[in-house]
Structures are given as C-alpha cells and as structure tokens.
Image 1 (tube, rainbow, N blue to C red):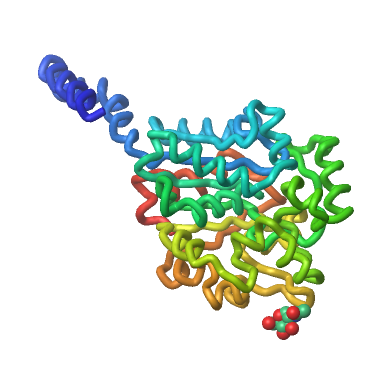
Image 2 (cartoon, helix red, strand yellow):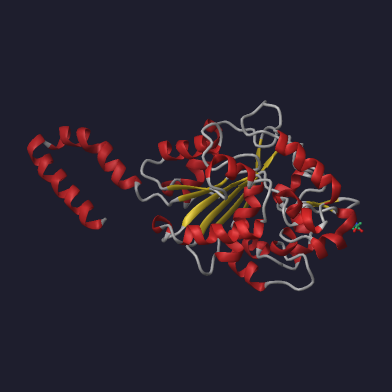
Length: 328
Ligand SMILES: *[C@@H]1O[C@H](CO)[C@@H](O)[C@H](O)[C@H]1NC(C)=O
C-alpha cells in the first residue's frame, strides 16, 4: 500500500515538472484527492427488517451514496443470509445471537476493517450493531462511531407494523406471517428462538417473562439481575454513539426506543430516567459523561429519509474523516 502510494507520488512529481505546476495541479487534483480520501474510516452497515444487504433500492443505494460521497472508502454491508432472499428472510427468522456472533467473525476476517470502522445500523440493525460492539469490541476490530437509525434499543411493546424498504409497497407475506407469530406468543420457546422480532419484544406489562425468556435484548441491555460487565466496558470504548429517532415513527412503539426511552406501563421514561442508565448497566452513562452520546431526529416516518438527507446528515458529519472529529 505505502509502496504504491510512494510510486504514484513520485510519478506525479515527475509529471508535474513536465507540465508546469499549474496545469499539473488541475490535471492531477482528482487523483490526489482520491489518494487523500482513501483514508476515510471504513463503514459497516446493518440493514433493517425485510431488507437485504444489497438491495439496490434501499441499503445498496445507501452504500453506493457513501462511496460516491467519500471516494475510496471501504463499505461492508452485512448479510446474515446467502443471497437476497435468504438474507431478507434472516431479518425475520433466525437467532439474533447467532447472527451477531457470525457478524463478529465476519468483520474480524475482513482485512480492510483491521484498523477500525464506523457503523450504521438501520432499524433493528441498530440494536444488532450495538450488540456487536458490546460483545466483540475487545476481540475484533474496533468500532469507532456507532450510528443507529430508528433502532429499538429498548425493544418494542407491540407487534410492529410491516413496512417495506421499497417504500409504499404492500407488506410482504412473510412480514404478515411474522406479525401473526409474534402476536401469538413472543416468549414461547419455538417462536422466541426463531423469530427475530420476538428477540427484542419487551412488554412492560410482562417484564418478568421478558427477563426470564427473552434471549437477546434482555441480555444486551443487561436487564437481568446478573450483569455482564464486559458490555459496559466495550460500549464505553466508542468514540461516539449517535441515535436518530424518526419523528413520526408509528412502526416502533414507542418510537423513543430509538433513544433508549422506555414506556414502563404508566409513563414514558427517558434514557436518563431508566435504571439501565442510572446504574450504568451498559456504559451509556459513561459515554454521556464523556460527551460521546448524541440524540438526533429525522423528520418523517420510520425509515423514511432520502439519500440527500442521509448524505447531509450522516455521511458528511459522521463518516467523513475530515469532519468527523469535530461533529457530535
Ligand atoms: C414507572 O416509572 C415511574 C417513575 O420512575 C414510577 O413512579 C412508576 O411506578 C413506574 N411504573 C411501573 C408500572 O413500574
């Protein structure tokens, strides 16, 4: 890498002498820019429910926009199934603990990520990406900035509405099937171990059942009496944790889950009012005290944003290495 950069610079220099500095800079500046921008921190994306890693109408387009805005940046979009169909299916069916473990292994094996990366998790991909930081930050490549968009950090308390990443289309059959299953029994072993959405279902009127039977969210949120100290240590190593909430989100109930808000059965608690924060079960309080947390809003419904909005509000402030160190 360094060797070839050196050769390139040397040939540029030789060329410059030949062309005259002015012309030369004009001719070569895109090239030099490219070289410089190669230093952007790599980006890892985790898609939401009903989407796949590389759907050209949703997350694939997001990945492409990042690469256009930050030439040379390495982008890895997480797939938990082989191929679009299996990957989409795995956003409904499967065991999230297995999926997170698989993602940890995958990213550890990607050489481009060895020096760390920034992560963007979309909808349920938000809390899954957080689980990657909590469970694997001490062994794998380091996540620097974590951005979650409309995540369900405190779970959902009702059956989520089906939404489609290719907006305004009718919900798929598989989504409707998922809803029926979740309504049937989120904590029945057969369902809770296989239905992704059951694994972050948190009914405030059945918290004991949740603590006893939820296999994913209750664990990564350290909601059980026995805490895993590793999660707080790992999450607190983030340089920045930015949570976006969709203002008119009717899919995530309550939508404040995106900011770690929790409806406890009688009132909506802000993150700061929860024991999870006050007793610092997962490192959020530490991050907050260090000025590393931020809470942002997106105007619109769940996962409704344009690529232009994404570029202006996510890519340039947080993923562009030239500005990322100043934005919070
Ligand atoms: C919800 O939180 C408030 C404030 O901490 C508390 O007074 C109330 O008892 C809680 N409700 C339930 C059902 O736990």
